[in-house]
Length: 334
Length: 182
Image (cartoon, rainbow over all chains, first blue to last red; front, side, top):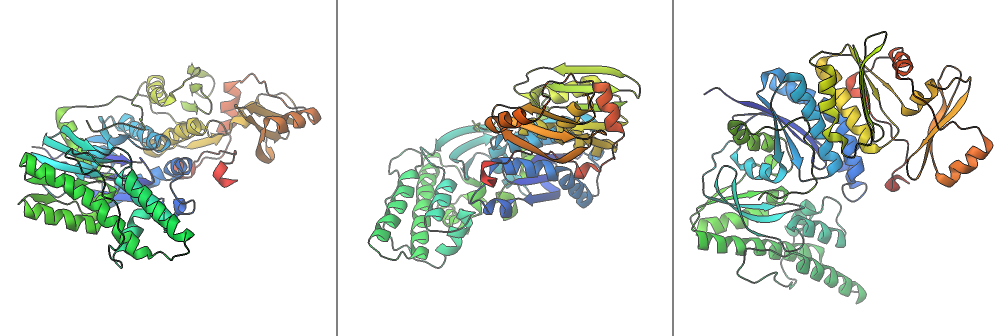
């Protein structure tokens, strides 16, 4: 079969990224322009500024990707773009940009869900074996999904309140760590011990998660200690929080491994870059003799390569979008 | 053919100018989701023709509207390797006012974008955004023109005399400050 090259675009949050992906699994070129330093000045992503920076940089990011690949847009077979979920203004820049490429070069346009993109990140340089349990963990999502084939999703459970990444960011803010909170908690936690007693989240037998209780108890603990004039051992608190937060994931994943007998696991989304979490899930998978498919770090956080990987099955099915495609701030995988 | 794109307000305006007259035009009023209509309209207007150049109204106005128009225009110019020129929404107004010196303004829901122009339609000073009460006071002291019948032929001919830009350097102008910048 002829090789399929997809040029993919991702602008759902604060990374302007364009990639060219071959046959849904081989990254020919990838450019990621992050705005993290700009948003760090404001303590978090400012949506309007994110949209502005995407519009300023997107043609330059394209030029960089094409130079890296040594290709022209006319050489690819399709244009793929993240249309949802994410920051609406940011998504729109990518969507309009992708439509122009599709129009000018007369290539099919493929709309890709950002979360599905995170799942398909594990297909890069790798094979996806079904059935598989996919744990999608990011700043906006915490979901456990069962996949029986390409684009065949069944949601087993999801967070009842905060997403895990959101909890990491909020706890980071409370203990005075700069943005981005998640990676900074992970760094600090390495120097600490889990000495603080924190409540365990949902101890039920569903596959749902909860993080608001854990987050609130950390905030209360910090406030109480401050009022008493006690110093907080930040590294120990970061470690205690991370340990409990990850335990919540592994407990539910273990339940699913036990109940379904599935032997393949994917972790996807920005939080999957957390090394402690990767280690814990690897241990769990070893215990159940399951194969853990870990994307490389670069494909864990937002990037266009995963969008190209997720677009490939849609290309094969001929599921194309029209020029009236709109962006959507919210949507779920299934 | 020269392609003119203006999406700085809720209206989507796409025109084709052949060097003498506007040969095709689509003006879609009050588009709430203009992302759905801009590209389909451009496709229809161009009808497979490749434009010689692109003119984009790069603001000020609706942040999202301006940004979508600019993103489309700069990407078209970059991929088609065609010259691109920008002009502002207030320049469009000033060009169509038969006066030597003029102050033009238009409102969004909270205030007014305003610009002062000399006899050659060059901006004097900077564009400003005044809230409604600031604008009222200003308008008591100066003659401000807010209602202009736009002559697109004149606007495009004015734009074509402007400098060609590299697509990478074409960006929206927003004028109005964000709360976070204040």
